[in-house]
Image (cartoon, rainbow over all chains, first blue to last red; front, side, top):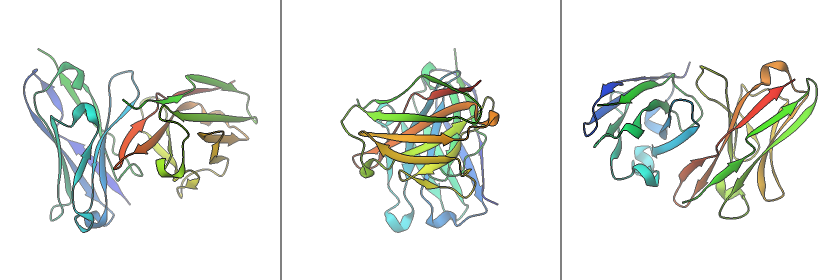
Length: 115
Length: 110
């Protein structure tokens, strides 16, 4: 069974940083493109970015609004996906989803940015 | 900034047929935009329904179908069930592969 489980969310202050993690299982992670999506409370879905498999170059692509502060990375040996968020803003408050490039979704991890 | 537009809300009767659309601010939606559709119910994670215009996932009910219609991506539900009441999102890809979600369509089954 394909599973992705996010962790690392919490209450943080503006200007800080965080790293979200996503543990993958049940599929060949090494060959999979992965993506992050977020959803602010009561709002719609926002595509954050995706990272290709190493065989396709392993590069990440980001949505324009976040490309200067967000970094997606992967550790294929651990079957883990990461999202580093720097210079946190209150508008980063959202439920962050890890997905197998939008096919299989986790339940999300909540990030709240507030002073 | 690219904008993807969906109907804010639609209502359909049980057993009826409804079509949701997804338009791009850049022009006609094409296969190059690789349209995807998702269903989200309150308190749940989104569930993928359609990818690549019309391809269904193994779990996608047969009553859901995707297409290109009049320059837009379209999701048609035929024989709507009460459990289809949900928010539906489309996603289009642009350029090197950046994705943009539409604002979502709230589908009511009444």
